[in-house]
Length: 389
Ligand code: FAD
Ligand code: UDP
View 1 (cartoon, rainbow, N blue to C red):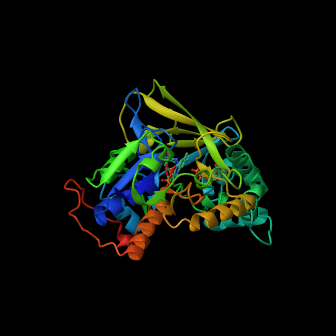
View 2 (cartoon, rainbow, N blue to C red):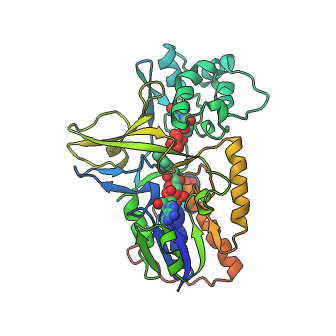
View 3 (cartoon, helix red, strand yellow):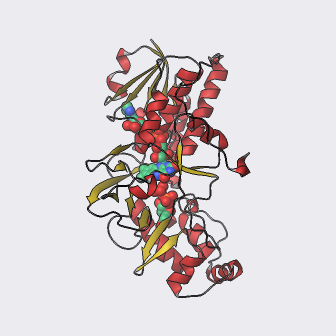
């Protein structure tokens, strides 16, 4: 008899299982249909011995001290600030757009933030309201930068024009007027020192947790006694797609190992206008691993395949609402994570969502926190940036 059946061993499922078992002392069964833990953040050593992310580059970043401290119980960190270049007009330029992007693309010599701001203002197209992913970019930097960097990348990635996608998609990428070329501006930016998989193994290593991989929960659910379920798979699938399939965008990953130390100057190079793939990731930049060879992955967007991204459009939002209503009516099933709540969430947001869910469930059920001693080998919480203290 288990208190909880947790479906999925990605961030949502692993955090929920860890909290329920270690903090509340409950018995948990975790089932994942993949052969491994970690969900999309899974990493492993490839045949050449290079640490790679099977499902594309995962860079940890958050402004939440709580989330960072929580995960720090299960891993130490390697400091890493992500930088991305885009291949445009035969040049490699910084993304997000910054002062150098503009100078490089247009052979200019802008040197102050004011000059860049004026450059954008002279080209920005006025929009009464910012509804779509096209609105976000053209209203800030104008049409030409939009077409060079965003329009075709977005069409490739999503199979839709930016004008069909909610504003939140391209709004993930800031626009800068200075020379800051970091992809993220968050307070905490780091990679798990020994990889994501090791971190997940540490989270799930508890006597109250039984882990079964390579198994779809539907194949075992009738044979298991459990109090309630925490589900992190696709929400439409849970209900046999009764209102129709909720679109999730997929990717095909093409991994390669090359006989050279490095291929490209940064971890990720985007190809907005060339090729069928969107970006090439070179893992050693992320992990800091030394190796005489290098491993890379190409990402080819696809309509069919494993679900990776909810597709944020007004129609899909409306369809999701119908599933969300149904989900609410399931008193013994709790939906959490990127697929189950159909939200374009980063890892840290999923961690926060799962922590909140566990707290709510505990409050509603009067679980008594059973503060068992933490793992012996738990690493100490790293020094926090001064700004966070
Ligand atoms: P998942 O990781 O998808 O886990 C769900 C698990 O449930 C899966 O393992 C699945 O096998 C299992 N499951 C589903 N259905 C069943 C079933 N019926 N039975 C049993 N098991 C089932 N976030 C960042 O913060 N930084 C990044 O740099 C970043 N890069 C990304 C790059 C790519 C290419 C992608 C696709 C995502 C990226 N993300 C990034 C987002 C990140 O992957 C997610 O936020 C996070 O992994 C979501 O965790 P989850 O547990 O909700 O879902
Ligand atoms: N995007 C783009 N050009 C770029 C980078 C991003 O058009 O060079 C758009 C694209 O629509 C992408 C979205 O911005 O899907 C969000 O980018 P992000 O890097 O956050 O995507 P993810 O890492 O989640 O795939």
